[in-house]
Each structure stands twice: as structure tokens, then as C-alpha cells.
Image (cartoon, rainbow, N blue to C red):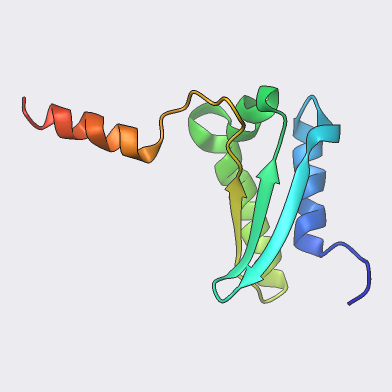
Length: 105
């Protein structure tokens, strides 16, 4: 393969860099396995809110667009956003514990 960046990775970088305050911190890694293409996005922790958007609307739109790019190139493309260090967001396991606690009501 030549040294060109794949279209899906290039597209994701372009979109995300246009949205964030720290475009120099945007990193996209691309891996391929039996499930398809996985694009992993890493941004400056201060830009996470811009990428996620209100109620996740921005990240849903970005995922839809990257899937469309994949379809045009006969590939299944998924997007994963890397959790920044020091994040205080609750993980799925802590949410599950809280839901279990609510079942007692």
C-alpha cells in the first residue's frame, strides 16, 4: 500500500479538526479486523464536549458520516472515542450498580 491516508481516516480527521479548539491534539488511529474498520479518535480533554455534543448529537452525526464513507468503499467503519485521562464520566459498570440500587425501590 502507498503512504496515503485512507479516505475514512482522512475524512474523520478533517471533520473533527474543524470542530475542536485544539486541532493539533486530534489523533486518529485505524485498525482492521474481522469486524471491519475501527477508527479510534483521541482529542484534547477540553474538546470532548464539542465532539460529543448536546445529548450525543454531534458524535452520532460523525458516526453516521464515517459509516457512509465506509459504505462507499465497501467497508464497515466504526468510531471509538478514547476516554481522556482523568475523566470523571461514569463507566458502564458504575451506572449498572446505580440501576441495581434503584431496583429496590
